[in-house]
Amino acid sequence: ASRAPEVRREALGSAMAAARADAEALAVAAGGRLGELLEASTSGLHEPPMPRLQMARGMEADMSTPISPGEQEVVGTVVVRWRFVPGR
Image (cartoon, rainbow, N blue to C red; front, top):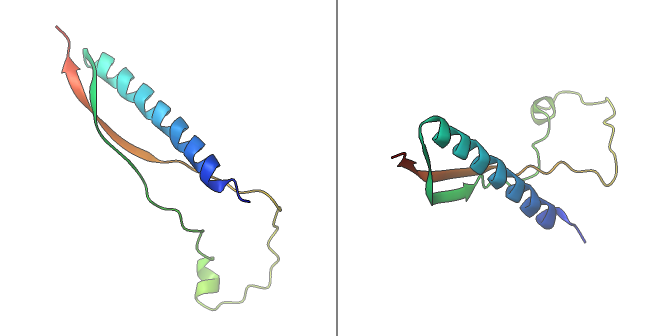
C-alpha cells in the first residue's frame, strides 16, 4: 500500500509549522503578534507530473529516463491567514 497520503499529511504539517513561524516573525517585526487563524487551505494539486512538453507535442523521445523504484517527491503547500494583533 502506498504511504503517499500519510507522507503528504506530514509534509502539510511541516508546511503549516513553517508558515506559522514566518507569520509570527513578521508580526513581531511589525510590533504585534498573531491572532486567530482566519483561513487555511492546501494547493489542491495532487495530480502526477505532466509528461515532458516535447513528448506531448509528438517529438522524438528516444532518450532513456532513469527511474528509481520506490522514490517519490512529496510536497506540502499551504496558504494561511492570521489576524494581526497590534502591540500595546
